[in-house]
Image (cartoon, rainbow, N blue to C red; front, side, top):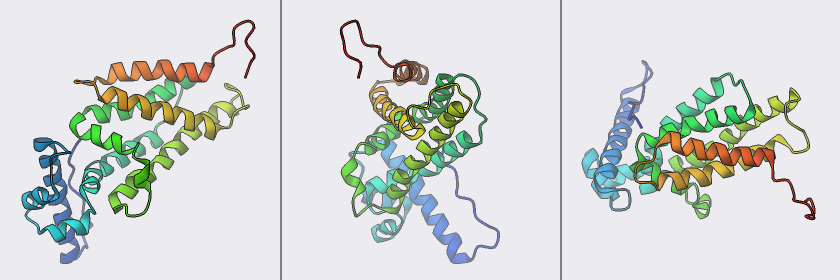
Length: 222
């Protein structure tokens, strides 16, 4: 996970540049405190102190600690999605799905101490209600974009006659996303999560989902 500086347009005024600079400092401070103390033990006040801003100023940019975590990863994940959207997908569907999710495994493996709490947030469905901070809302909003990208890959295979049309591309994409979310969470619980091992297991489960399980003799088909 890289802490890239926010780019500024050449004609931004002094106030806008100051706001971007404060956001950069807050984001950088949050990363350092989370890595030094761990996400659970870190406090917003410590982050504000490290960023050299008042605690009230920090809350202008992030509603709470979770929002600060999302601030760190959102820009990176948007870049990952842009890369995936621009990629030309070729080969068998299982290879395409593995490549699609494999890019995200590589990203999460770059800093597991931040990835673990971030991925955990995807399972905190109660947080989808009111009161989300702007960065958390942005994080959850990205999921729809990921599913759309998967749908595009799957629908192309259906249009080419390479896979059946008895199931909607949206349903297949949703199933693949569910498998990924479950698996990436399990994988990140390893002491030293290696992308290759995580992707290999994900590939097996996705292949199983795509092929299905044929009923044995005497068993009724679903």
